[in-house]
Length: 320
Ligand SMILES: C=C1C[C@]23C[C@@]1(O)CC[C@H]2[C@@]12CC[C@H](O)[C@@](C)(C(=O)O1)[C@H]2[C@@H]3C(=O)O
Ligand SMILES: O=C(O)CCC(=O)C(=O)O
Ligand SMILES: [Fe+2]
Image (cartoon, rainbow, N blue to C red; front, side):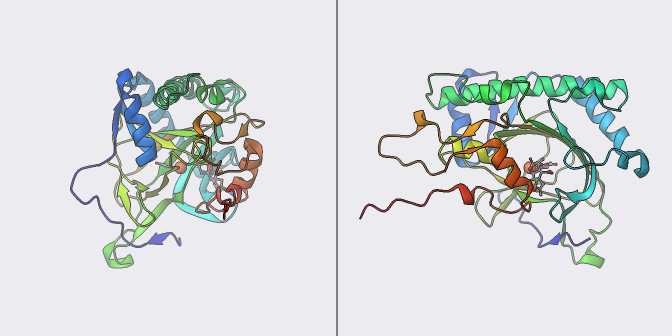
């Protein structure tokens, strides 16, 4: 598979610079805002999501991915269902298989064992609650009076939030003798289009975030924590103050990686534009308004690594 890239730089000082936020402490709200500005990424601890629930969901996901390919592909379909190697429908590939679904699905109706369906339903409910709590800490930290300004965008049962289970099998292509020690891409570089995404994985590393256009840093795995990722729509809502972080996953030669990601998105009709309460008198709005449905359609027609916000950037106004 043509998913090889140059070897990645490892973190430089042997420690991880990724901000760690204790969300049980209300004082953390400024630290979250700073993390969203500097990294577009942070790790959350003391989150209140049951570790038992997480481990049941992971076990059920592992069982699902170990089914014969014919059984898994019965669920195939874009954009909801099982996929293998192909990501999206525009030619992207990775060393990954996945289940992708609307997070507000009636899980009672999906053709999985009861224990899997219940875990999906309880996990998405619990992670959504945590996400709304974090979004409220962010609005507080930004000094926005109405605490639910962001959380209300993702809290309804009609939102277009998504849930994804990814499985990266051990990759035999990673071998110094046969591929010169190059990386194999599990999930290619991209930003997430939604508002905020919440990732949890097993103990296998592979996730990297891009801080500048050239330097990738590895995110040490931590199965008991959640990683929050600022997405494109939150970059727009904050008029570029928060950064939608570019990220990717590298395959591992020996261990499989299982990740679960909740993409908190708005309803299809929601209008996305910089929040007026965040724009100072002299400041210009950097983005044209769009509806989530417009943005999603254009995202679905793009390649993974495309800069999807580019077409919504306003031309700078020249005063002179
Ligand atoms: C190549 C693609 C896959 C993707 C839709 C797209 O056309 C561009 C955005 C991709 C992405 C990245 C974040 C999420 O994993 C995802 C579900 C999303 O909302 O946007 C995927 C899309 C997908 O896998 O369908
Ligand atoms: O699987 C992962 O760890 C990250 C995958 C990802 O970025 C995505 O599905 O959008
Ligand atoms: Fe992503």
